[in-house]
Image 1 (cartoon, rainbow, N blue to C red):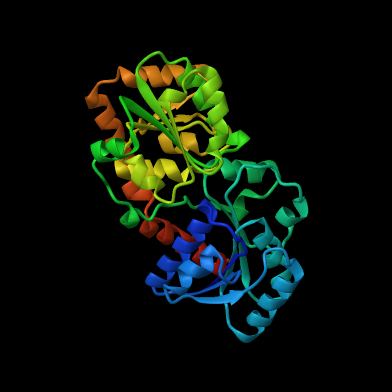
Image 2: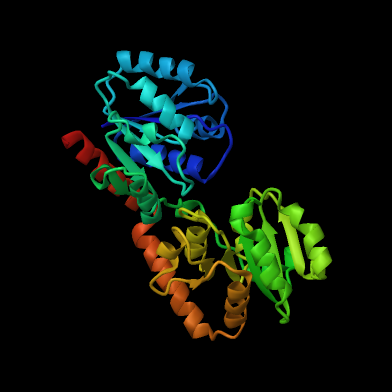
Length: 348
């Protein structure tokens, strides 16, 4: 197959990383891959080093970008156009209008759509949701079930490295039991809920925040009188290395389609506590983690419970999580499923 990925995003994100992984591993599987992206974007910088052909579009120039891709499609035989990012969806619709090519649209967020035309457009052959929670959102907006397939996101586990927890704790001054939150600060990511739950936790422990704009939590932690027990590290390119120093990862999101950070924790052997919402419950169900109601009180009780949990129960949880990740959330398992969907689209 020949696949054209459209990824107009100019900033690195979990979705951008999935486009990168898809492209690299599709090529490794023997398929030809071309990526339409912005020059010198994170996608371009990473993929050019892997010998993947790129054509250049601009994130904010929908029609110009569509024209670039239409011209490319006139010269090259492409089997599947796979769009990523809402702007990629728009560009893909305009670029493939009256073109003999199959269009697949990635949907990886739970936010409601404001443009139903994009989702009811007959030009789209298939939607790929990165969780069953996302699939349900698409169905809510009357996308036919026959046009939705679930393909879980993955983590490039070969790029993850394990480090001794004691070394990480010593390097950053983490003390006692370490609860960690990894993610850029936003209202729906639940950072404040995690801080509020920790603030009423009387046991000795450390709460670590890693992610862009988490510095915004400093004043609140100070006002709560727990700043001495809270480590706010801000954005870190080595976030997964730091996770090795966590005793447990907290995923306090109020809205989450599929938290890749939880999958990273699965591979690193770090237990996970997460809110029972969206794709989090798909990951942590079956005893693979601790699910809680999305309130600070419920999270506090879960944190207290973890402090008293015996090692055998923790080890059983992390073992189940690792086995699930190894069987379902590697690049190889994702690409196998993705190719099946592509073939179904081509045969349809």
